[in-house]
Length: 115
Length: 112
Image: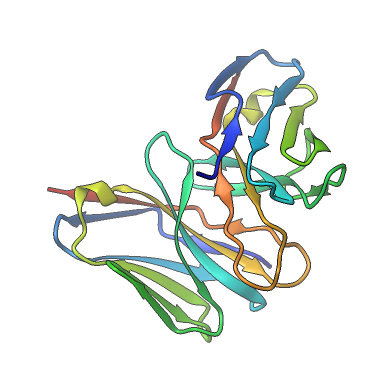
């Protein structure tokens, strides 16, 4: 059974803290993604990675960074958390693009509250 | 642009058909997807359609694609209370950035 695991379901952090959100996949997928989900806005892409040590900015990268030191792990980092980063964060992974459909698998999400 | 738009809410009675609509703007979209999110859960892929297809049927689900109007719909036949969820339309291009672009999601409420 394919699995994308996010380390926490719920997190509460203080403004200004450095926050790490961890995501691990066990499917040997090349691609990994971080999205945030907000009501009425759907999912917005923050960062993604096609390979180890590789990262690309998505649509809303400001205030975030990522790390991919190992193929199975993709970390999202909030350098200095702010209240407008309170959101649901979703990690996903997918196989390398091969010209046919590649399904993305999602984790359960981390609901982050910044106070 | 890569805008994907959906209406936010749909309410139907159990046993009726549900039709969830989506419009997209990027004409280079190759794959179009429907994902389902149940309360407290991540996203689950329901179905997808390749851009050279007009229709795809999978049990109670029918996907219709009007490429000229950039309009995608998901029809759920005989809607059940267990179908209550948020449904997301998403697109992916076959060039450049290979990442899903999502719509805002449509919350489907099924009334007994």
